[in-house]
Length: 71
Image (cartoon, rainbow, N blue to C red):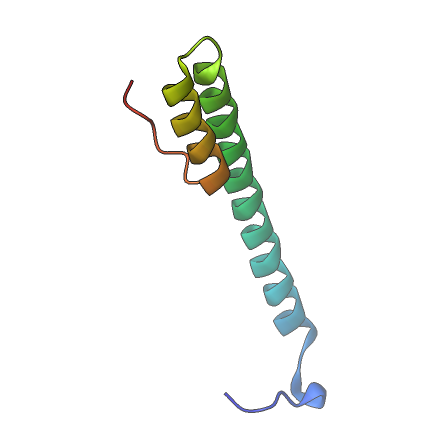
């Protein structure tokens, strides 16, 4: 893709790009919310768990992948 010529960009092009970007932001916000919920769940699971389990869950929270840990 070559350089964009500003004089050829229309309002419609800008509006379409704006819509695409807003949709992407919404998608990323939902993903962030989901990851935050998983992190909180892992934290809750760690409360009252033995030290080894706490270490495993802490690693899960640090890595950010949110995979469930078998206890």
